[in-house]
Length: 287
Image (cartoon, helix red, strand yellow):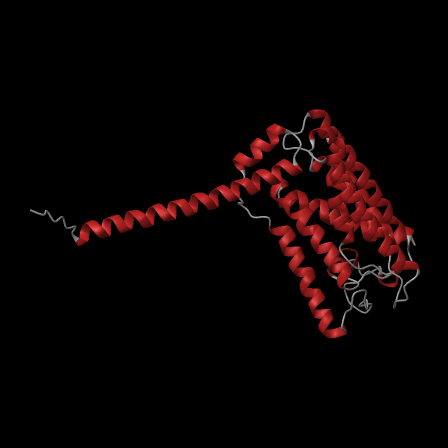
């Protein structure tokens, strides 16, 4: 005698729902694990202290998300697309010298130009370099240290770039976000140097930053002295932006819980940066 066992529709439906729920849980677990690994990797590469790495990995929630670098990148890209349509921008120009945003020595009374020049770029090579560094270096730094700190470092570099150019290379025009980009690079580089023994692949990181920065500055110097354009473009912003990164960014990006002597050094660095900015402002006012 054969025994036939049948399952009702309710049993099949229940097993189907359980199977779907298990599949969803596995997908969420997989996504959660990937996100955790990404956060751990960022903390591992951009923090030197193991306690800071663990604290960051345990507490990071992407709330709020790293919006500063993403926003500034989209703004720069939008302006480039606009001027590409209007002027037909190539790999190295033309430079929109009549723009309301470009820094010009004969328009120094229009003080917004000392900051908003960052939205313009001298060709797509200039743009691509800045955007890549912003996203590959600036975005992870913002995830680790927050938008306020990274925004401060970046804008300090932008302002230092224009003011430094107005003092040391006062006859040239200025476009691009290189001041802010080099502030981020210099701040991260200083962090690597100070904590070299705790960083994995420290020499590789130093070499990579050196090659990237040297190549970009070399191109800027070539464009400054050997490339005919509608107006001379400065490379001083790269250097003064980097100096801003070394002062403002050095201790801002160092760790989460600063000790007393580190806080004192932070105020000293802030004082040095403030004194340089004040000198440059007074120079422009009285000249």
